[in-house]
Amino acid sequence: MSDARRTAHLVDLDNRRPELSQRLFETLGEMQAVQPVAWSDASGGFWALLKHADIVAASSDWEAFTVTEGIMIPPTGKSMPVIPAELDPPRHGGFRKLVLPHFTPRALSPWHEDIRRIVADGLKPIVDQGRGDVVTDFARPVPVLIICLVLGIDSDWNRIHDLGEEFMAAFADTAHPERGKAAAHRLEAFLGEEIAARRGEPVTDLLGLFVNAEVDGAPITDTEALGLVQLLVVAGHGTTVDAIGTMVHRLIVEQGLRDRLVADRALVPRMIDECLRLHAPVWNMARTVRNPTQVRGVDLLPGEKVMLAFGAGNHDPEKFADPFTFDLDRAGLSQHLTFGSGRHRCLGEGLARLEMQTVLDVLLDELSPLELDGDVVWGGHTNSHGLRSLPVRLVPDHG
Image 1 (cartoon, rainbow, N blue to C red):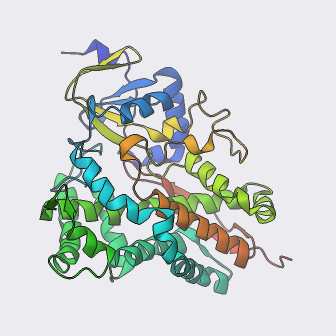
Image 2 (image 1 turned 180 degrees about the vertical axis):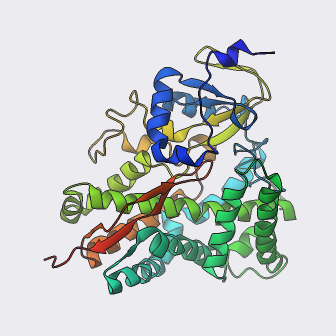
């Protein structure tokens, strides 16, 4: 039986299609102008909230929109919830209080020197050769090394990156669900080894502190520990890879931007926010309707999936004037949705900002300007977006 409620708002939005990444934000903008509350038949069907105000409102209404049924469309093959991203109050609050204090700017300050060293070392091959790929040669290894440094994981960055990439890519292959489950199992097995090595042992690193912690007066379970560590490791590097790549791309292609930043370093945080607004590395997260509710007069019913399309909200002309234009001076820059909104705002925001600022500082302090050295390649998974290749070379005879 057809559902006129859904048919009236039907759009062609399938986040499993690789080609969507080529015009992702333009496509979302076109849908937003016609159907701000849209229905897609993909992945079993879901509503998409495309307006900034609606996404903010839904993010704060956990009684109507729950995360406990999963935050990904389509669902992953993981065997446990991602902690605390897939917890509602009150349990959510205890885990957030456990993790967040360790990722504030003050808590991260002891790592500044090591992070700058990792960034400078990561750029060295490009400097030595005079050219390279910012994404594959630099952005991929650096965030993995940094999150492992902060957590205390001593492992090969290639292994961690590949496990995370495989996990994110596999669950979009709905024709072969066993692939996603196998990828999730391999990632969980690796992280389980790191957890087991620290369970019940004296705390010597941040990961050990987390897995031996108590929340609400009780030790966290093995399942909760695995869900928490998976969030920190996977979300702690993949999204930053995309953020760094698109930021460096903007630094290259926006005429006069580098000189302006060199002249006024106080603009660096605005540069970071505008890049995050334009190119949200995580462009959507899911909720499930728990209680009947309405958005813009559209009835959403219990059990229906809802996509919060952060990337569409970041390009909402009612919130950001001329939203597809890079504008370092725009008002309300920090109100973009790239880190989410409400109680589930990204726990790793402080670390991501620190990494992006450090990359800009090293580029502006220590490197000659970069220029493109070939075609850039865009890509993404079902909720991520970024560059897959950014070939560059040092501008010859600069200065």
